[in-house]
Picture 1 (cartoon, helix red, strand yellow):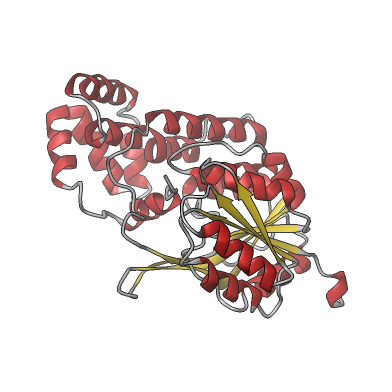
Picture 2: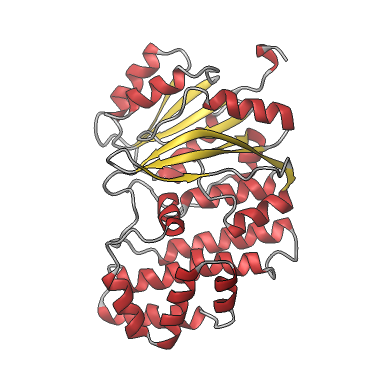
Length: 348
């Protein structure tokens, strides 16, 4: 296949207070061994010099387009604005303060061409602020190209993660995901869930296509009311599960996903969030009522001992659960929960 026959890629970079970071990430994308067709810098409100820097980069690089938004609308709406302007055959969403290997676009496009898949999932590395590797997000190997139903179950079980930036998605599939759900947590997860549920096929490539940089404020902590956002995400996941097939919602994979990502997250928010005592107590008791003892052995069988412990503590004694969570509120926790928090990263 000649270069002119290969699918064109649109890279979308939401930019909020990203004036310092934009030149570096744009240079990395422009210097790809297979440069993308277009790079859309979606400036999410004129808070700092980000729109000016984006305009300068657009003037310097023919493939770069500055997309200024008059107001700060959040990362979901910023990505949506870019998706609605995209002209490529595939879309790659990346963040301004991360890095992308020089071969990332070519690697993803090669896999898309070879498989014909609507979604290509690559590997990623998460780095701590001191440069040490925190963990690697590995792509499952030996699975070939999967239909949507099988890939969706892998997403529910955590084999396919909810991170958006290590996935190349066909633009027609992204169009089916619009409008993007708006939530302060798990914004990436909502888009990925819809994309996988709408894709005909998903394939995997065992090469690193993204480097996530943890920075102060990247890891989700208390300070925001997350309950409403979790309701939004729960609705998206349920809608996507129903779209994939009627048996999905009754599956152990779906129950485990809801326990970890929704129910326990809602209870954690009630205990650690910025609520007055009376409201926090009401929300916490409502969260405990959502928990089911039958999910305890499910979590244990799946090796999710942290979720099992949190479920057991909350059902036995809400004061005990509060003490455990309050004592550990500044600890990053298990690898799986740090990964969940990274998915939830979103500009204010």
